[in-house]
Length: 231
Image (tube, rainbow, N blue to C red; front, side, top):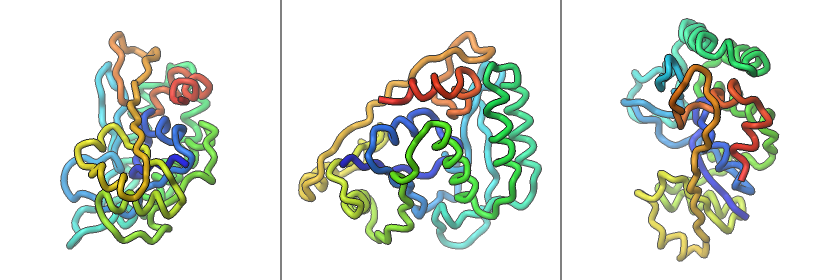
């Protein structure tokens, strides 16, 4: 039983979904601390704009005392950012082959009213799960599992509480994981080692990797996107 864990990112990249396909169960880590400063994948993602990587960001409230989990973060109360993001996406991708089949449903989601960032991200993720034919029954929220430990111990406890026997590590996990702890808990470790596929990108002579999955959906469509990220 392979389990992987990841924060609920905003319109994530291909590797996020490859990780889900590699897993029997997947935990969205929605109750870990949100960083007060700096960029964060939970409220921003990258697209292609004028043949360069360009960040689109959901503005969130950062003027609070103490710390907050991702699922406690509020979105700023204005719709300017929603229209700005959609205008940027439309300007870049409107001439792609699969623009219409993806943009209409994405725009409806982005233009809806959300108080919290997690509500927006989960709505987008559920939409993408349907497109990619990912079973929602394999998805869990960490906040629903009532695990209070931290760091590596928390990953272990989350994995074991849903009866996982193998923990699938993301490529960025090697720096902080305490591998020996998994051995002591009789859990196996597996490693993602995701190699980003190359596909034809609108207007780009040189391929730009690590963009939001919508770049792939707009350019090559649902069926090819699934083939590119499935193991």
